[in-house]
Image 1 (cartoon, rainbow over the protein chains, first blue to last red):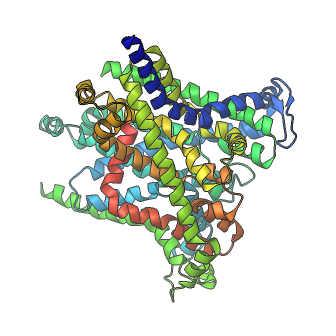
Image 2 (image 1 turned 135 degrees about the vertical axis):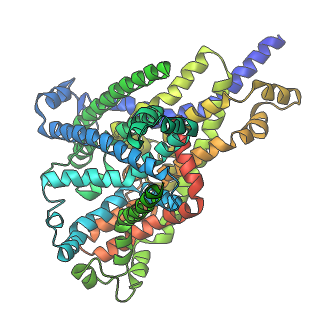
Image 3 (image 1 turned 90 degrees about the vertical axis):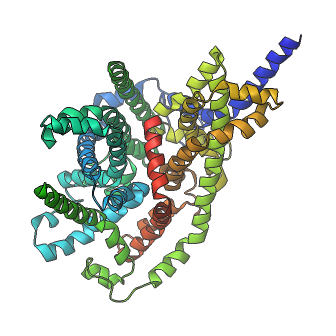
Amino acid sequence: MGKLGRKWSERFEFGFFTWPALICVAIAFYIPFAMTIRYSLTKWNGISKHPKFIGLDNFKQIFSGDANFANASWFTIKYALLYIVLINVLAIVLAVILDMKLKSKNWLRAAFFIPYILSLVIVGFIWKFIFMQGFESFYDITGWDIFKLSWLGEPGPAFVSVLLVSIWQSIGFYMVIYIAGLQSVPDDLKEAATVDGAGPFRRFFSVTLPLLAPSVTISVFMALTNSIKVFDVILSLTAGGPGGTTYSVAFDIYRDTFQNNMYGYGTAKALILFVAVLIITVIQLTIFKRREVEA
Amino acid sequence: MKSNKAGRIVLEVVMILLSLVFLYPLFLAVINSLKSFQEVMTDVIALPKKLAFENYSYVWKYIDYPRLFLNNTIVTVLGLAGIILISSIAAYKLARTKSRISSIVYFLCIMPMLIPFQSIMLTVLQLAKDINLSDSTWGLGILYWGFGAPLAIFIYHGFVKGIPKEIDESATIDGASGFRLFFTVIFPLLKSVTTTIIIIDVMWIWNDFLLPLLMVNGSPSTKTLTLAAYTFVGQYTSDWQYAMTAMVMAVLPSIIVFMFLQKHIVKGVVAGAVKG
């Protein structure tokens, strides 16, 4: 009898400790997710009481020829690939330099990290001002054609602008991850390589970089999950322009649901984004696991 | 050896110059927030002839800065307190209980880390309206509990596993149990990991844009700082001096906090990324 009572009190306590979290997570994710699945099978403008069930028509329409979605997907893939490569290469270079015994090390680290603590929407606006007003003044002084280019007004440059501003805002984050990784590389390993006569580049590629592997995995993972959802910076910097060339998938979903009031259609796209993210994450984690075994 | 030293000095100078160029956009934002409209239009680079602090008093009043600051603080503190509380107790219990139900609950708690917010934003808004959490600063704070819990539970869970079970057992013998055991014995041991979670969540909630845009954009009295700055710039598209003033006012709190807590913030961000 006593044992049974104890068991029940344990169960009671388990529930007491875990239910609050489960309820909150359900409100934030599971219930909305279930609703998303349901709406994605309907045609709905958000106003009428009863969404009209249309089966998989939304998905058929998206895959059979939605130029907006195709363009936004293409933009997001290009953006994500370039972002992942550039930010990791640049952050590793920065981290290697700032891991040396420089006198201004602390200032430099803080300086490159600062944009990361700022809101992306605000960062987008500040850069919009630089591109639109600042570059004019830069051109007056330098006469360099690069400042005369319409950085937000033409498709190619606008893409570069979005990429550049995103990298500017978040490079400090990747830098500190790599610095932490470098600090865990034992000094005697680096020294041993020097004694063996390895030059700085050889040393970097054959000793430091392999030991940085765990940091690379984390950074690539973070860069991927962040870039595939890019939204805020585009909203304030280009608002999707010029001519709709800088719409990302996330922004396209936002446009369909909240600006065009195509709720059913928008949620269908949202569901596709979820599946894409899920597949990419699973692939990443599998690679992650395999590497752990090797190490 | 000598050339090595000279090379290092060159590198140092180059890096300092690079860092100044890197931060130049922020500097430009600050100086242009202190100029008149004419000055901004004629020359962005020049320093202001006369510091136009009236830009600040104008924007301060127009967007009701104290109110926004209070709203941001309410949302951040309320959100954070809830995340810490529900996540720490859940993660503790889940890490200590070995059963199938426990594993399932743990999986359900951390799985949502894979769901991108944009996939559910519309229906989150619908649900929030249904349960009266939309259009309210407090409601927004409460919504963050669920959005922040998965990562926090994941980080706490990993940490609790490293705390020996004997500590619980000896405390049980002393007569402590349930919540008292947790808050007097376990929670203090989680201090370092709690700091990490506080840092990453404060940076996230304070700067978050999309959820506040959906939830509290209806009335000026419920807006957050970033959101108000966003709407403000939308109304003043060509008055760059006011726009820059609003930008500076929006980012200044973060920069001030960063200057004081720099070391902790960087450490917390790294720890959060490595564990998360």
